[in-house]
Amino acid sequence: MSLKIYKRGNYFWAKGWVEYNGRPIAGPYRCSTRASAKAGAQDWITIETDRQIRRHVVGDEISLTFSDAIMMYEASPKTAQRLIPIVQEIGDLPLASITGALLKSLGPKLKPMAGTDTWWREIVTPARAVINNAHELARTPLIRVKAYDTLRRAAQDKFRGKQSRVERMPSDKDWIKSFCQAADPYNAALVRFMFETAARIDQATSLTPTDLRPATNQVWIKAQKGHPGEWITVSPQMMDELFSLKPKRPKNRKTGKLMRPRVFGYGSPTGYRKRWQTICEKAGISYLSAHSAGRHGFFTELVVRQGVDPVTAAKAGRWSDPNLPLRIYAHAETDEADIRARFRTDHV
Image (cartoon, rainbow, N blue to C red; front, side, top):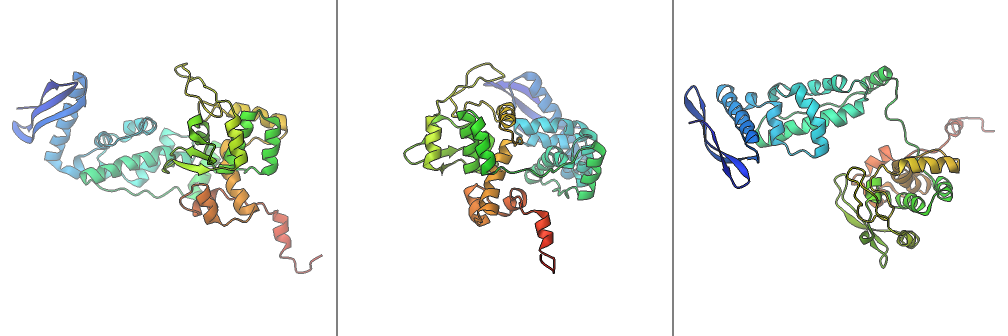
């Protein structure tokens, strides 16, 4: 008896055995296919039948392919979008045959004009996560991938005519002051809030009136980058500035509907860019992104300019490891000529 489909509630279920050469090799099945349409249920039965036949003939580790591993992986919409071209390229390969070198070789094929950091983030990382998830669930081989080296990054940058990992310029108090003098109250408050709290732009633009506690000078920062949401304390001046802003209801660009009221009036974490470019041009200062003005400026201000110890600064900015902001967010500001002059034996 082969697998048959029947409907139960809102979903189609599979019942029966998987057969090979007239003999049952897997089952009995009595399980949901998780499909609400008959065609989807039939696709599930086809995939499951093929998988069980491969398993019967060659064994578990060899039979499971990358496409099979995709079916086991719960991907976010963003990750799922990144996985589509990857599964089109290596979907039929058995997991046991996929190596780190193979994953890294997909970068030039799928994104020839991107940098190695993009290859790692958008190709290697999601593919590795799928394979290692299958390792946990089905005991398939674990995969470890060595990062692209500096020579490979330099060669790719030369090929595409663009340098990757360009050092960000952090904001300082003078830049913040000039920006705020040329900005409207909402954007002035936004940049001051990010500079004071090291909030990410998505956390800042997501603030609603219910996220403010004026009595205790606290602001709710939503969860992001693996960190849970939490209440943080701001200065009384910052809270007064936030509370004085009349919330705005931005429009959803996709649906056209009005969204919930936002403190700074932006409906997305990218909506600020054109406005900030205009403000910077009006103020006669170089344009800085929200990340440079906020988190980079925050850590450089505390550690480099004010001498706060990195552990304290990292905790205040919600970094779990102080070595990360020291490596990425702290920007040296000593003049190179001054450093060289320190080695002179005949000081003038």
